Length: 151
Image (cartoon, rainbow, N blue to C red):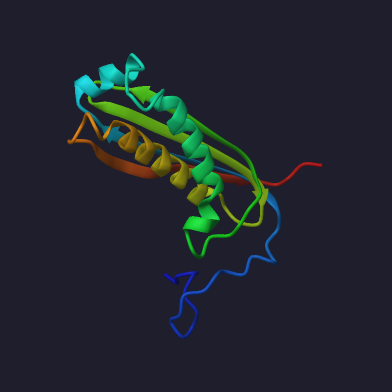
């Protein structure tokens, strides 16, 4: 298997995508932040002192996804059509999903993964005063797909 971000000399480099065709691309990712039940009750009741945790985490995730090329050194700056973030409160934490969409020459999976990561980190930041046992885990790419553009 050949790594795409390493040249023949072994140096890291950005992949040249200029010859690739523009296609419609989608990626979805997920992750989980484990929290204590008391913390989950505070989140549900919007009683965390910093504000509505899930609303702030959603906006942070979207912003984070949009900033991926600034955060991941060799990722491409792409035009993003949409990033969507969803949450489900479970007994032991909050499950996070993202879906990112673009029309471009390269995939959007890093943006979907970054969106989940930043959402989880925002929940962590907003709840750190009341929960010292939080764990962010299970961040993974769920799906990526591409299709020819129809004009």
